[in-house]
Image (cartoon, rainbow, N blue to C red; front, side, top):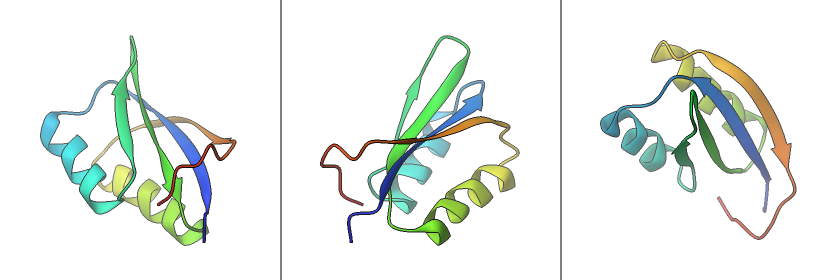
Length: 77
C-alpha cells in the first residue's frame, strides 16, 4: 500500500530528540526547519497513520499550523 505523502507545518522548531523520535516512530517522516516553522513530511499509509502522527505532535504540545497532501513522488512508508 503506497499511501499519501503529507506535509505538516508546525510552529517553531523541533529539538533533535523529538525529531529523531518522530522519524523513528513514523518511518519515512522527515523534519526540516524553515525560517519560523518546521515542516514534517512523509508517507502515511492511511488515515489512522495520519491521525497517529497528529496525535503525537499534540501530545508533545506542538502547534500544527497547516496540513497539505502532496503528490506521491515515489516515497514509501
